[in-house]
Amino acid sequence: MEEEKQQVKKKQVRLFWGVLLIQFALLATHLGEFWPSSIYPMFSQAGRTWTRSMVQDVSAENEANLWTVHYSHEKLLGNQFPIDEVGINQNDVANYIQKIEQWDQPTQKNMRDLFISKLKERKLLLYQVNGSLDEEDNVILKYTPLLLMQENNTTLNPSMQ
Image (cartoon, rainbow, N blue to C red; front, side, top):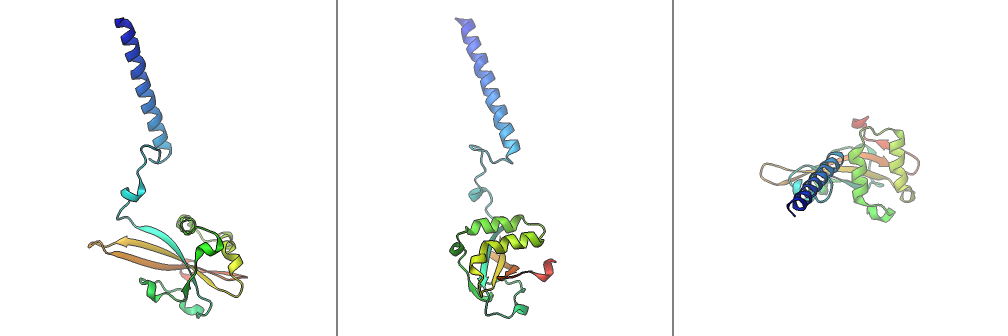
């Protein structure tokens, strides 16, 4: 009877270490994002800089004034363009622009192709919006124009070339 208890205890210990080893392996290969050890970004990343995207319809604006970085939504040129109107999620665009290191011609074309159905006689300006907190926990927003998309061409912000 005592021997059976020891064998069961050994199996339990081996099972525990096996599960723990698998958990560590999954955490190591998924950058800490494996349930149930997920870091829940909505809580763990509070106060960190974040990035979103925004598109403005600047059809009626002078191109020379488009490339100014703004820190207020009210100062942006044109009217906000509803991204969901082209059937894409704003978070997908934000994720895409956040990961782009080099805005080469194919990358620019790929972004324009997302909006191509709405570019007829229209100019859309893609912004990268960075948000952060200052020392007093006030939100600071920075609107950086990235890409001017038109039906037949795309123009990258001159400061990024």
